[in-house]
Amino acid sequence: MANLKLWLSCGLGGSLLSVTAGCANQAEENGQSQRPNVIFIVADDLGYGDISCYGAKAVSTPHVDSLAATGLRFTNAHTVAATSTPSRYSLFTGHYSWRRDDTGIAAGNAGMIIRPEQTTVADMFKSAGYTTGAIGKWHLGLGDKVGSQDWNGEITPGPQDIGFDYSYLMAATGDRVPCVWIENCKVANYDASAPIQVSYDKPFPGEPLGKDHPELLTKLKPSLNHGHNQAIVNGISRIGYMKGGGKALWKDEDIADTIAAKAVQFIERHKETPFFLYVGTNDIHVPRYPNARFVGKSGMGYRGDAILQFDWTVGKIMDALKEQGLSENTLVILTSDNGPVVDDGYQDQAVELLGDHKPWGEMRGGKYSNFEAGTRVPFIVNWPLKVKPGQSDALMSQIDLFASLASLVDQPIAKGTAPDSRNHLPALLGQDSKGRDYVIESAGSLSISDGEWKYIVPNKLSSYNKLTRTELGNSPQEQLYNVRKDIGEQQNVAADYPEEVKRLKALLEQEQAKGIPMKKLTPAKKQ
Ligand code: NG6
Ligand code: CA
Image 1: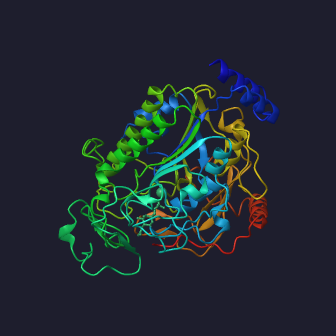
Image 2: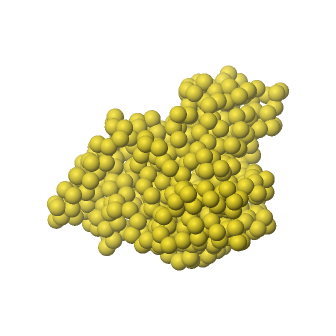
Image 3: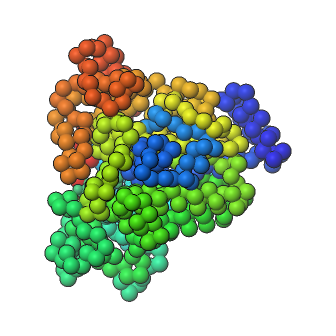
């Protein structure tokens, strides 16, 4: 504890930003630095209103609630995008995914979207002497180019080339092939008797497909017209074609257990050194097929049960920290990659059993949407040693985690690295109640919000996703909402406040002109 105090008083005492290299070096030389471990827990498709500490009544999430009760619960924190790949890309790189036109929802055989020459938040922690790990959902591509992966050998480049010492990942999503875990750059539990082939173009002769063999879909059937009716693995049909896998194939009902076990193992193995761990849960993405322990427990069907399973995962991670004596000095950030969706492709009764539960809270839209529920997500910061419990209404963006945490561990950021990330460490730790001047959100179109006014760029994209029943917030008209007074974005007041429209539009255009120019706005490709 004495050592820890020295580092804290040296690096963080008084102004949080006054960490001086000399001070940190001196502490290190004396063997006296003890920086916090950092864990990102990134839920998948978990809505603002899906957990009880954010107002859910129909479902109870005691572990997440306890993290919030002993930490800081943010009410206005945003992802960069309303779907996984672009959201996670920005979280890891501090670079707006909308500046590139190849960061839409990735197929399971996509090449690695973050290029090895880019510097990630994991690289940053590694330079600071941390051991780094990535466990769970990846969805950022693997290997060099689409379709070029050797699923039966080494899959490179991979997370190891962008800063992660250890990785145990699903390549994309639960609903996309390949349905196997990849540990470091190889398929885990590889089964030589069942070589793996993956294609997103054509089926493998002799392999039954969900669309032709509904009788083989013993666990979940796809929703009408959503696709998800190709390769069948574990009685569930997926997006994409796959052959082989044998004993390496995952079982959906065990995915959460696997992720929790690997996260706990990582914590135990690295308890002596500072570590950075990213845990991307599969919950509550489709196909939702929770472990029997949770089935029927929420009364809301598999979607609610998957929320309970997510909460359990959080509990396992927190218990492991406690057991290793690391709770006090571990900075845990719990958030989601995008807003909620109810029917995202499988007949799991999420719509029928939703009842009064509002995954989107009081907001409009959801996953895929420019409206607020697309990107305003749960965001909890827990660091007992340093962060006082409470609520923060500061305007936050996940894009800033890179620069803020670099400041925390006293790492310089080279020019060109994390170009869109800003240091908001004081807000992250509850010492500044304002946060960003504005956040930029992307969901096919772009929006900009200063926390009071939100402007959505006019566009010709569709305004409604019939499959998921989501209002997408697209319109050929300019839209302006006062999200402070009208969080449900009901009143488009663009015509009444032309000055606000002009101001926000100019700010956004300024941002767009910066850095790597945006080639074109591409809506996320359906894979
Ligand atoms: C969509 C899928 C959806 C989900 C999403 C990615 C269809 C019709 N829908 O294209 O089921 O997989 O992609 O979700 O294919 S995300 O959270 O990983 O971004
Ligand atoms: Ca997601």
